[in-house]
Length: 310
Image (cartoon, rainbow, N blue to C red; front, side, top):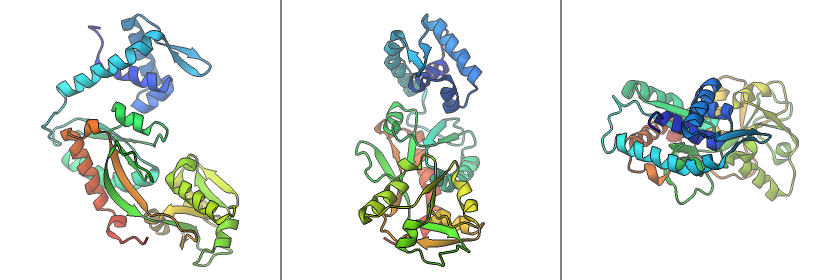
């Protein structure tokens, strides 16, 4: 163990979580050869294969399973020992924070947050990745994610939270839509095709829409799926397709594309985005600075300044 460093141990924990060299590389921002080399070094240090290839990915050995918790404890102790503790200077810090956020929240928050980072904390890095709905709490608990930006209908009581901004869901359609002229009726809402992005089936926005539709006892027409939400407004041009978006984003798109913004004919709850973190990070000075920076970024948003209807 004399020749192992904390970077190898962190790679080991992510490998145990992902059971994949490529996915570990993606999460850590490394190349696959770098992760493969790290795994080779780990095998040498622990004198064990640790993770073996299988049809379902990589399967950990008994030795790897027995090491996972002790390695996590070692890293936690190391971070407490060398971490910033009660003192933290953003101007000189080189910490790297990890956040998860849906594309909409990232699109709004990262521009003002990046300006603050580059002007006040040039050495700090903030990595943003897509939400992992199934493992969200686990990632916060393990310290693999520092902050989760999300709209949650039923937040977990064990997490700390900070309200960031509110919005509401509207629909967009081509300005020259063949059937819609400023108003979206319930019949049109149900009969016209909708467009969503992959993975959106588990998003809060589409879940509340589907629940509202279910309460009407009716069924929507077909749904088109895209990879990227930035493709949505361009796709609507010259078609009868409609799409749901938070109003703040719809307003931005309407400045770039010939769109009309429509009120949703079914009642939906207000969009409430918040930052969530685990108790383990509550008293960390650097984390407190990050939370405040994200809150200040949210306060600059037009959706935060504009009153939202119920």
